[in-house]
Image 1 (cartoon, rainbow, N blue to C red):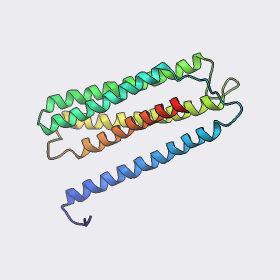
Image 2 (tube, rainbow, N blue to C red; image 1 turned 90 degrees about the vertical axis):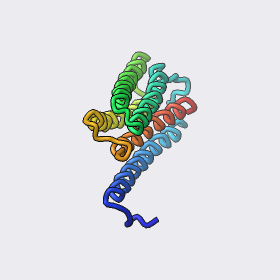
Image 3 (tube, helix red, strand yellow; image 1 turned 180 degrees about the vertical axis):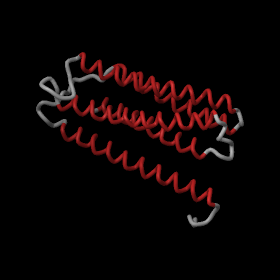
Length: 192
């Protein structure tokens, strides 16, 4: 396929999708580095081997998975020209995204209640990694919420149609990435 061919709109869409994938790949590399460092550091003598993840992290996993489905339902509603339904699903996704962040902070509070901190005399390397990796993910979810708000405003303005879904597709791709990344991190933390 010749990428120089097509209408200006098609070339613009390809460029935006490519930029998003470059960003996603760079984020994956960062998280791969942190999880690799986590594995290497687990050989340390002061590594916690009996730590249990906060319950709130499990609930947040279910919430972010549900939010991906609600975002997909919004896109499908636009394809069917059900604009009000699409807006409602986007509002649901926004609500679930906020609930995810609240649950993450609840999880951090659970860790602190167990006496573990990110830094200081009661911190340890295990908890520092968990705090760091989860907090950086929360920051990316906050960026995802900002992009979701932009999509939601554009949807309420009825800017999306079955033939014009690029912004929503980009937002949905990033949201799915955040969802899959958190599921990966939870599986990783559970087994390591």
